[in-house]
Length: 324
Ligand code: TRP
Image (tube, rainbow, N blue to C red; front, side, top):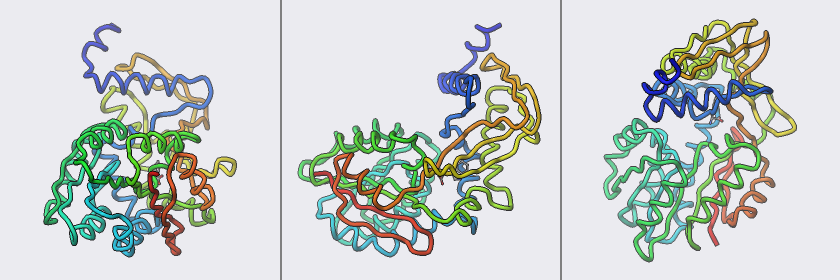
C-alpha cells in the first residue's frame, strides 16, 4: 500500500507530501511551509489581498517606487542589468524599468519558482521598449547565481527584492539570506529592498485579517490544496484563520486554528493527524522592521545603505543597499 502511494507521486508532489508530513507531525507547534500558500488559487487570492483597503503594504511599495524611480536609478550608474527575486505581477517593476529605459537598453531577469508567475510577469512588461525579459525558473539564490554568471563584463547588477518578502523569513534567516545575495554580487552591484515597518496594531492586524475574509480564504486554501493534491480530508469549515502579533519577535503570525478535536487523513502522504480543540497550524510570519534594525541588517550582511525612502501613509521602507 505504502509503496503504491509513493510511486504515483511526481517529484514535486513527493516533496510536498514529505513537507506536509514533517510539519503536521511535529510534537510541538504544527506548521506548514508558507511557500505552499501560493498555488494558482493562492496566488490569485494574494493578488486580491493586495488591493484590499486594509492591506496598505503593496500600495505603499508601489507609491514609493512610482515617486522615486528617477532618484533610485540616478544613484546607479550604467551599464546595468536588473534581476528580481520573485517577479510578482510585474506592476511595481515597471516604474524602475521605465526609468532606466530613458538611458539604456536593459536586460531584466525575473527569478521565480512558479512558471505561471513568470509568464504573467512577461506578459505584463512585454510592451516596454528596450527591455529584454529573460525569465529564470529557479529558487532565489540559485537563480541569482545563474544571472550573475551571465553578466556582461563591466555591467552592474541591480537586484530587486520588493513587497517585504524578506519579512517572511524566520528570525536570523533574513540576514543569512542577504549574505547569500551579497556573495553572488560584486562591488558596485546593488539591492533594492522593500520592508514593511512597525506600526500601530489597529492598522497592522486588519491587514492580516480583513473583514471580508479574503485573507482567511488565502490562508485556508493551503488546506484545500492538501485536499486536492494529496487526497486529504480537511474540513475547511472546521478550521479558522488567526492573525496575531508577537511582540517579542515583532511579527504578525498567521495560523489556522482547529475549531474542535478532529482527525485528518492524508493518504498520499501516508499519515493521519489529530488536532485538539483550539490547536493551531502556523503557516506564515511577517516581520515588521524598525529603521535602525534595517541599517544593522544591511551592515551585518555586507551592504551599505546608500539611500532610503519611507512611505508616511503606510510605514514602509525602500532601501537601496550597495555591495561594497
Ligand atoms: N508576504 C505577505 C506579507 O507578509 C504574505 C501574507 C499577507 C500572508 N497576508 C497573509 C500570509 C495572510 C499568510 C496569511 O504581508
